Length: 315
Image (cartoon, rainbow, N blue to C red; front, side, top):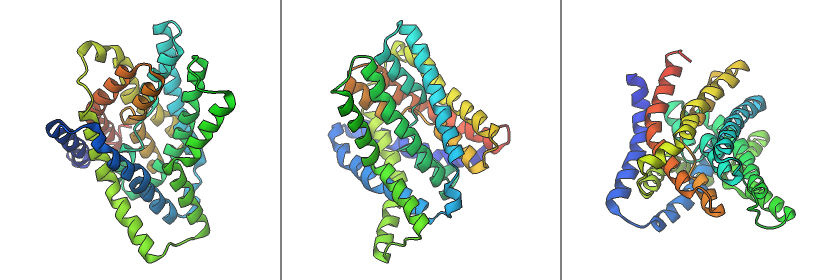
């Protein structure tokens, strides 16, 4: 357990420091805008590109494992959606947000940092590919489900174009495509560009973790009742999701690197994008905000336990 704690403590320690600063400094959330732009548009894309471009081509072809990880995520998301539909007697919009709370991991901000700390640089490849696959699914799922709920913003053509734009202009996905292309073609950037990419990628994990802590700190403190209302969906996210991912990938005989990376991504708390979607469609905003805050705190325990079970061979 000491070895596992030595891996996870710096990871969640950075989140806690961000949370502490966010609580003490009391600056408005607008102060995070430029840091988020740096993380999303520069640092994390540089990290994905750097490691993907340096990987042997044959290690980029584990599409079966990518599909299995994304399939496990969708299975848990659908289950959470069905449970919410039963509880609300058919509220599709609300159930969609609950489904995302149950299955949409914060693997964009937290995934690379956790992978680097707990597994090593080699895990960046499965993290980047799994993230791209799951993000594409969620970019499609959310607007389609909201359209079915009657919250459609525009025609079917406009919705389709909006989905395609989100997929093919997302900096993470573009960096994955560029990294894979560089690995296939053997492209090497000039020395100056390589140094810049290395500097940016080195800043990705600490900046993303710190920003995540500040983001959580700026959320309002949830009431006990509101937390109880979403406790089942947080349990699906933090416990059921990694278990399902483990069962699916181990059944396929996945390589230990892919198995561990997929389980760690599944064990991460609910993505902050869920709150963005809830705000955009004006449904379950409080539930989404509370899920992000509480699940992130609980993940310090659940991720540590899951990583311990993997390291000791129980899983």
